[in-house]
Length: 403
Image: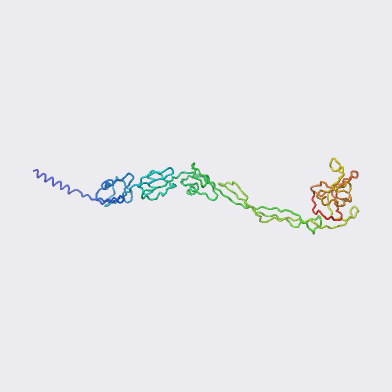
């Protein structure tokens, strides 16, 4: 009976085993550096596959499938074969402005390594090698993090990030470079400011051209064709033309200064030329019934004086030439006297006289002062024509000043 029961149990066990589904095995390759491990197993959990291959991973290592990092605790997708790759962590030395640190990483690129290390990267940060550089072994990376800066320009405040070395480089990287005569505070070559404030002043200079009239001057020229004391316009004056350049400076649209740079004469002024006569003509005439010969006739304003009527508190009897003040002695302005001392003249209503004395004169008229003695003094005030009698002197004052 016992033998029969054993036979029945064996049949049942055999029947049960023959009904179980057959488990298929997969071909698995695990590449770890130069080592390649091959497994035939139905297991698809990466952690167990590594255990079967006796491969240990550090916390910074990673396992790759189809080039992508995969979690160790999630089964692989259905497939007939698998090739897994162990990516071992390497040392990445990070050099920063405040020192350096070493990171163990199995990241593919510099940027990925820093991000995984908890470092927030900005496009304006400086990385050498750059963020997209691959990591194929131990690597030293120089990292200069960017900072925020406020740029005041064109009436606006712009916030930028930069890790540049100078203000000019930061502005250029932000797309707001200094152009032309623009200035910045701090200056373009200065280090970036600690307070984060940068001000740009837009500078524009313009040059304006303006016309300026050049006044003409008058001058006198001697003319032998004109008689003495006659004048004639020889040449009419014409104003000239000058062109001036003025540089105007604007800062942020406001004029801050202007400077005259140059002035060039486009057309010079043409002098007005007046000819004065030097031709002496001797004439004869009769004045007060007296026949005279004269070489100059001149309209003058006359006054009278005597020794005690000279305008002062004292009496003056002598003249500039040394003669006594009396009838027949005439005073003229100093500039006439220098040329005319001793010159004989005839004065209507007064008679013959010679120029012997110096007087003050008037600023707007030709003038002579008729001398008298105190006993025969006669006031003669008014306009008259006097005659300069022959002979003609060697030196003639062709143009006569009022004083």
